[in-house]
Image (cartoon, helix red, strand yellow):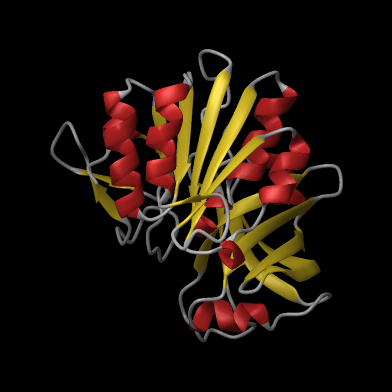
Length: 262
């Protein structure tokens, strides 16, 4: 299916903290909700004015075609998200989407593992929901610096996802990084497909780990973007097997691990 990309004035239906510095923003955007696929994103203005000038990209965190709503999950880390955090229920936001290439939704085999680093958990709820509903066994390995930086763990568990955690300070789950948790898990269990989202350094390590295990892997890349349409070339990423670059906003954000150099 080819998406029709549109600019929408989306009304805020919910906007709440789900962790000390993480908020979920729900929007009435029926045109986007009807078309959006797990792994795609929207490009949003963070204030009613043109300041800041550039939109911000956010993974789509919930998709509900019936109610015509989508949600995004974000961490308040800079000026754009600070402005966004002050938007209230009933306000309208300028939203462009759905954008990009989403996840492979019919992987070979039945056992799937999701690997999330910090706010990289954001695109996984729609993916997990679809996989669980079509009969896949889904496990999620989530990592963060500390327990307060987790979001979505209970929500994913309620879908039927088997959850495991790692924190760098040991405040929840296994102490260490999610990459260590992945290596330990792969020594004990087999999977047919892996999906990962998080910082590029984490994704590079996961690519190596899954490569050694011969485990097919899709990555949801995080890059600074401007247009979100592949025009400005601001979010390019070097290809692995040939000369040239991928546009994260159009070729991605989801790519096969072997396609991209990290």
